[in-house]
Image 1 (cartoon, rainbow, N blue to C red):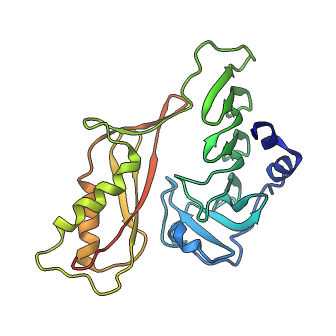
Image 2: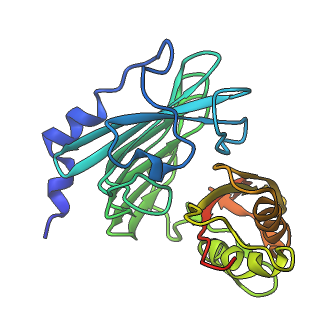
Image 3: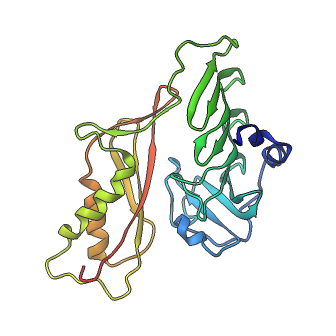
Length: 274
């Protein structure tokens, strides 16, 4: 078993290697979707004020800088910055071939408030919480100290260090109100429904690439701000956006008991004859 190896000196060195600020994104290619990082040494990805992906820097609130590592069983490091201040607000590592929100998280992760105060520090193995999760209030006071092992909670303590009988859910996934549909299944629904929304007789050009898209489920559970991240024909674009607009209503995701935005990304694979 590997549990105690996660907090080795090598991991600690990675966790403490963060720079406080960045002047500007480095000279790396701009990517709109994570798959565009394949074969690259790194990339820059831009976001709006909800951290919903954009296709480029115009109107960006913040950005991610991805670096290919391929060392210590890690393949990628992501650092997230606020555009205006250059302040670092997130650092994560990935063991997957392409870094993504739904797979590959590995090793230490930290997040900061925009003031610079640490908001949380966490450790992942195979995308599961492993080791200690600590969260902090904006004034720096400890909020939660939770011990995890391979995705399960072993013990947790409140801000005074006292053990809690019932460990609160750190994160609750958004869930559809009627069908109890998980967020991870939404791209499947879009894939299933968009062909029926294409104009009669529409045929996609030969060699049409997958169409990447993103949207957010806001803190009230409403699907908002759907956008395509890669270009395609107008009829196909309209059908994909319409399929997203028809998704069911949701109960919002919760972080430490508070409703938050949930960013959803997917791709529509165009089959022959569509």
